[in-house]
Length: 406
Ligand code: PMP
Image (cartoon, rainbow, N blue to C red; front, side, top):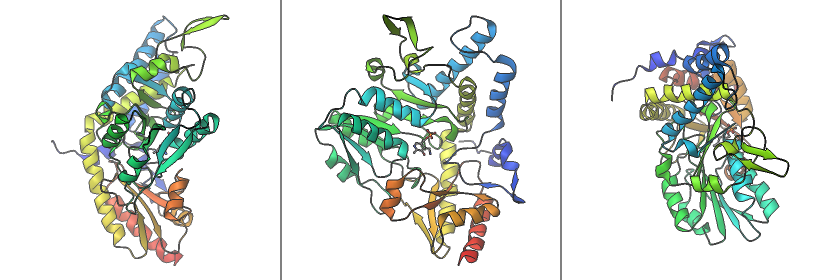
């Protein structure tokens, strides 16, 4: 492996040069949304300046350029995930992707007596769509527990996989605890029992090499804005047999072959799930993001972030009264924490005045907060563009803030 010049890579991100409240920005909120390198910003800018046209409609030059660039992004994403391009539905993000599975796959299939299994560490995006399905079909939801370290209790999970279970939803990586779940093993167990699996890969795709084909799931969802791409982009990967069997979720232009008032013939998947004008510029940006991440190498990114995580964890462990939530066996670079006697929002507000951006709140994971018995946590989340000096700045700021709040 060739050594990476991380300082040079950091310079690719214009916003990281900013100051906030007169202090250099220390951006530790990448699990919320990632920053964008110039290559992504330039790709979006170039599209609007030089190629802007709608896709799949016009035969003129700009129309073909736009279509080619948009479809090229699909190809790049397919390669990035190690799946087939014709199994990728381009959509607005993980939230849309999971709802598509809920409405097109689950809603027509589930019945009273059926069950859905989820885990206690799911993001609301992998809970609420299933509650809506359960409400409308009469299915029930069962929840797999986690242990005190934030690891899934696999024995409990497998004990829930009884014959009435039709679907299992699981996060590949927890956005709150950083836990990396053994999704390959989990999907194998589910598959043995004929249970369809939906993996929420939102927090995995930006941080580690992915081989979705090897995971053996049925559906895998990712969101572009967490992986250096523009907001409003995401992808659902699904096995071709599911895509062929699923009815469209939204109707409109682009998703049809022929429309008559006595009946409409839909386009083939994935296009039958892509009604209306898509986020063309966004996907061209996401294609550039995939190129950018791949050029650095996801294994290099993972290794860098693991070093930052280890260093930050060690530093935080050295501060009195800091409680870290989540010490899973395998963990992504996310640290949820609280300081004794301080509210998460107060901590985040005071850290912001020091230039340090962390997220505070429930992180769209109410059930997980209930599990730990806290209303909210602060979360510092790292990306490869962060530095060890930033960890030091964060720790110094936290020490200062802690004293203010005591
Ligand atoms: N799942 C997880 C684990 C997430 O972290 C997020 C984003 N916070 C989502 C789903 C939802 O992603 P989006 O809002 O981009 O659809």
